[in-house]
Length: 91
Image 1 (tube, rainbow, N blue to C red):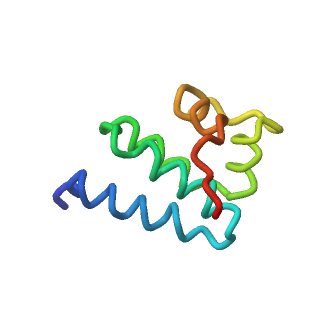
Image 2 (cartoon, helix red, strand yellow):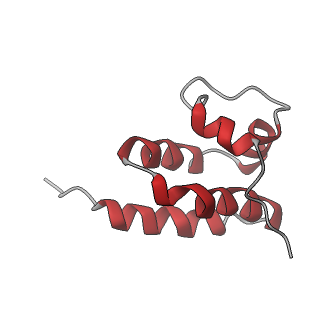
Image 3 (cartoon, helix red, strand yellow):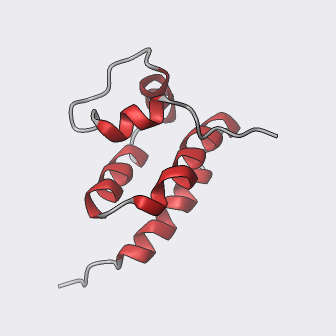
């Protein structure tokens, strides 16, 4: 049986995946959200974000912009925080 991946390694993987989405827009949105909020996350928050990372960027961006309703498993306080867009800092 495989040992569970430590939380710190999962966080590092999530950060990498958040900032390497394939488009600059998605990187700023998803990576910026990670950088702003991940320091306060626990296990359930990270599990939510890992599930979000499995979704297509266009869907994540539509949910964050409020133009499309998210699936029930992703709706909630973290997506509401993502909708604030207070973490996108473009120089």
